[in-house]
Image 1 (cartoon, rainbow, N blue to C red):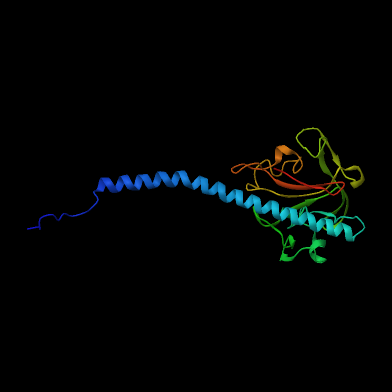
Image 2 (cartoon, rainbow, N blue to C red):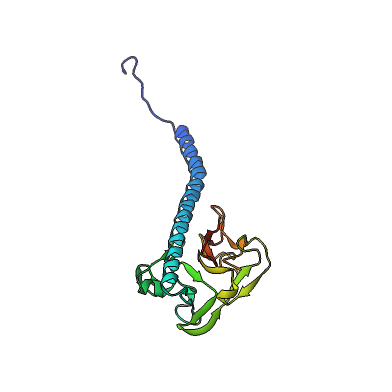
Length: 215
C-alpha cells in the first residue's frame, strides 16, 4: 500500500513530445538570429582590419615619395585564385606581419575568405605573374565617392583617378555574383549591406588620402 499523500511525479510521453516540439521551435527561431549576429560581428572585424590596412598603405606611401605598391595579378598559375592579393612589399618592409603560405606573403587573411588575403587595387603599375605588366585598370564610378550610379570609366593612371587605392573583403559569400562583379569593388550595388546579404566590404581613399568605407 502507498502511504497516503504520496504520488509518483513523471512526465507522460505526450508531455515529453510537447516539450521537445517547443524546444525545436525555439531553436529554429533563435539559430538564424544567432547566425546573423555572428556574421555582423565578422563584418565589424573586417572593417576594423581594412581601416588598419589603409593606414599601412598611407605609411608606405609617405615613406616612398607618394608611390603605392604595384597591384599583383596572377593568371594561368597556381596563384590565379589569389588575384589582387595584399601587397608583398608591406610585409617585406615591416608595415604588416609576414605570412608563409602561397598567395599570403602579407599575413592579413580575409575573415570571410580563409587562406586568402584581403584584396588591394590602385590605378597604376601592376605585376602580371610577378613581371611588369603595364598599368592596372580600376572601374571608378562617375559619382565617386557616392558610388551609387551606374556610369563610370576604367582608370589606369593615378593622376587621372579620384580614387587613390581600394582594399576590400569578398564578403560572407565570396562566390556570389556580386563579389567578383566586373564593376566591384567600387560600385555600390556590389557592396555588402546587412546580415544575410552578399557582396564586398570596402575601404577606399580619395586622392587627398581621406579614407571612406562602404556601409
